[in-house]
Image 1: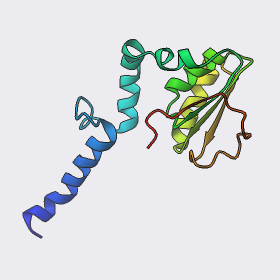
Image 2 (image 1 turned 135 degrees about the horizontal axis):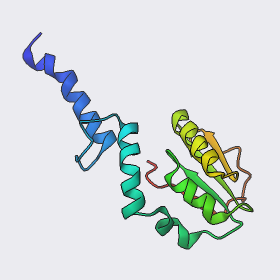
Image 3 (image 1 turned 135 degrees about the vertical axis):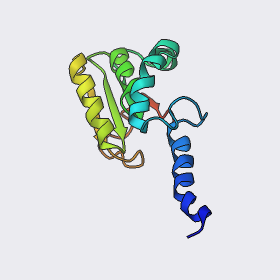
Length: 141
């Protein structure tokens, strides 16, 4: 095995980490798995880029919202507060771990208006047609 063949898996892994963790190639791209990096950066996001700033102008109390690609629930929890107890938020993510984290966060905050699903954004059969007032697909590729 040549030297370049021995380094290839490490190079591929490094490129993958940069792509998945941090497209701008800063801070956590080499230091932590993606879920730890998200947990560490979430407080900074709340401080400098509040979720309410993005979704607040578009959502009203009593509406139904869907957060596709919800991740750990950064925007989902803000949507749940904005629509209030008479509204509803569908949270959809492929990763079951993210859905479990979101469910725990929602329970701690007393949010009972979130319906979380581990599913593809292309399979939304659990949402009735024409029942959603606002759809957020932030970062969904």
